[in-house]
Image 1 (cartoon, one colour):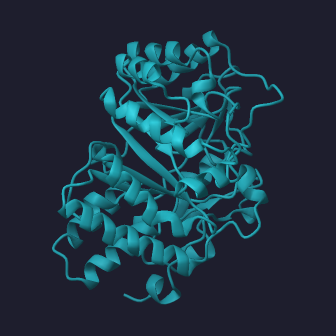
Image 2: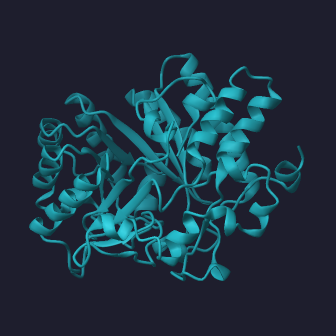
Length: 382
């Protein structure tokens, strides 16, 4: 996760201690995909979520056991996701339980099910943040989510969160089809006085894997990043935003740094230090995911290779298993670099996007996903 407001504009964020730690012994943030069910049909859904045929899910007691396990391990944040987490009937009970265990809770949702009563309950449980996904303007969003009225319902959800004092932000996944919608997301945020935006680079898992030409070109990604940088800078100067972040492609860090250096920014040296602290892509290290059946993954987008089940082995033992071939690679990246990464002068700041999409632990089948958009000259020329 790259904090554009901090690194490009010098404005600190609330979770920077987790993103740019002085020491790298911090425990992972855990994404709990607590249900497979969803009331929308998003064409780019990474978990193939839908509302239809039933699938097994952790019971309330099993989910509480998971919470106990990650609390005992010292994980600082539990992010409830899905599917649509608000379709899980015991969600509020689980959030309350996590709070009693001292874990900060976050909700990732499509926002359509957040009524005033729901927002008041979330506020009463001290949920620290609600991230609501949008894909652009109203018509485009409804098209992408394949449900008419989804945009209007999500906007209502955002307003109810703000009304009850819950910090809420917008989440946007960049695809070839919607990357041109980024300006509308900034406009929506400004109109609603939403002060946090998070831009995800597409990773082709779930339904996104079946999309033809889903991945935007390197040129379009670069232009999108340039727009995000400039728009963030403008909104920070106007006092209209607290955090703008990008997720999933750690080439964003070097690209941002190169732009600062080209502009002669006084922030460049400090930004490079923060990027070195973060050490780039740390999936399987600072981020973990657990699905609705209790399977543990290196992150929420790497769903085809399970590290183990919390029903068979405690989370800590799964996460600390240095014999696991996937964790071995992820935690020793310098020994297992992608061909392009081996030539790159920015590897210590980026860490590559090296992963397997088909579930293989054999690194012959791994690739940079999403692809690096830096040019050969940018990665090799001092």
